[in-house]
Amino acid sequence: MKKINASVLVIDDQEEVLIAARLFLKRHFNEVTTLSNPANIIKTISEKNVGVVLLDMNFRYGYENGKEGIYWMKEIAQIFPDVKIILMTSYADVHTAVEGIKLGAVDYLLKPWENDKLLEIIKHAVKLVRKQSKAATITVDYFTGQSEAILKAYKTAERIAKTDVTTLILGENGTGKFVLAKYIHDQSIRRNQPFVHVDLGSLNENLFESELFGYVKGAFTDAHQDSMGRFEKANTGTIFLDEIGNVPLHLQSKLLQVIQSKEVIRLGESKPRPLDVRIITATNENLQQSVIDRRFREDLYYRINTVSIEIPPLRERREDIIPLLDYFIHYMSHKYGLPEKKVDATIMKKLEAYKWSGNIRELQNRVERAVVLAEGEQIELHDMGFSDLDIKMDDENIAVTLSDVEKSKIQECLIMNDNNISRTAEQLGISRAALYRKMEKYNISNT
Ligand SMILES: Nc1ncnc2c1ncn2[C@@H]1O[C@H](COP(=O)(O)OP(=O)(O)OP(=O)(O)O)[C@@H](O)[C@H]1O
Image (cartoon, rainbow, N blue to C red; front, side):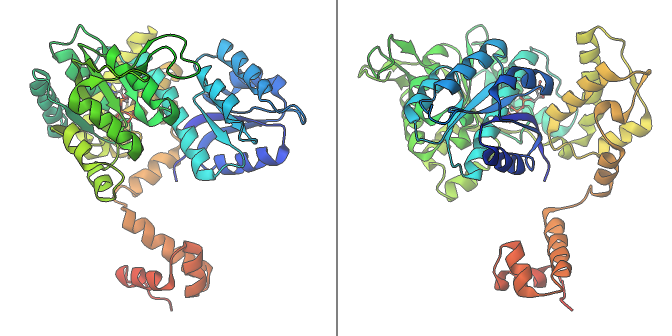
């Protein structure tokens, strides 16, 4: 499993909590640091270039009102406003945690946590970090490429930009869904009006409605004044609802209501406010499958899917890799005021064959690093953060499919378990019958 490229810091005064967090998170993130003494927080964030902090709210025994956590949260936010903070509390002290969220924490987690939940929350926070650097890096610069698939996607975008048709953009992470949504907006007559991006996947459920629909003074305890939601902020322009596939079912109906009626009602108010917004949504999920699995409302799916544009992953449009490489070398060299470096033909071949699972984002990040770090006149693979093995393994595995991986995992487990079916099935987490079926499918014998 490929680790997520992020630096995560966990702060707790209980050593066993830190060990558990470290063991689990190290499997998923490139850099995981743990700290038992909050006094070192600032130094560590700076040294480790931390993007996400998991912060315990109660450091000292007998001092369990969460104020210590809030104190450190404010300190971090003041010095590193871009760092995302997740609060942890063992005492179901939701009230203080919610206070923390209002002060800027992205979420909270109750201890003892479930690993899946922990992972999900941190992944969201990592996305937020990326989105904000994305907002900082994305300008009006587009580079489409030359593959038929990408030219078609941009052509469709141009055509629909002239209308207000609701559009769904599909594609893996880093393929350029945000860029395409912004492109549609920039090509439309709304181009001088607001373009509001909402990452629905990382929007805290508790704040979903107030954030999207707004509220009036007194709607809830801390509603001290009227506040516009994101839909109203996008009025006369475009709202880009990113990661729509991650919206929980019970909130999907509220979203549908607004999209359908083109009216929004602020929390605590009954008066609908008319909206004039273009709606673009995006997801990396297979929404059709989500509809079948009843995780996504069918009516909402049809409502957002008047037109859909799919951006293929980079590995399915390899002819775009070198043009994109050239584009980013030019762009980054200009950005940093450095001379443009060359890339040798043999390296280009390897880059063309590489899997680029992080898509354009990965390519862009690697080129940026190389442009800044390369010492000679040529960009070498190690300047792009590749080890020789990365590329070699990738070359060899270019045609590896999920089935190949499954087959080899089964064979490996059988060998480890001396062909014992029960133990192998147990280790793989499947039934004996399922193991037999798979062995038959992959033509694996257990002799
Ligand atoms: N056509 C393009 N021209 C130039 N840069 C691009 C293009 N498409 C994507 N990028 C760059 O690649 C990175 C990822 O793009 P973007 O954020 O639009 O992808 P995404 O599909 O929205 O990702 P995610 O699903 O992870 O949010 C950005 O930094 C962006 O600047």
